[in-house]
Image (cartoon, rainbow, N blue to C red; front, side, top):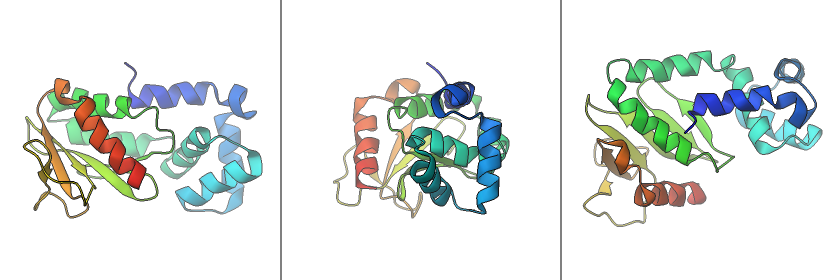
Length: 182
């Protein structure tokens, strides 16, 4: 199973073959556009250069985040004292790899998953538990899919995970349902 970082690097390695320009050449193109927002850059690359969404997203992401180093540092900091939770995070991101229009946006305490708007977040909440916040306002709660309560006001539900085996079809079904509504 490849990590998100490995998948992004593989795309960078294949950029010339798939898009006709190297990653560095795309960075120069984007630099000349004077666009500052991720969505604006993606839209321009798709419309003017016929770049696929996945590559446009990566090019914009790299441009705005200086080749991912700042965001990778945020993720590394989140799991520095909670390394046993990182495989759970990696499993969730890997399970979402077939959804090409997701913006994975690390923040200081969590990672936001966005499409047109945030539909989920992943947060290492304690040393032994990772919480997945999911935005599905009309979905009823269950024993596993609980109301978010005071966890995070940006999501309606929360699923608590303590083991990578809990990244299962049920969890991914909820995340993908929220993704489709975003």
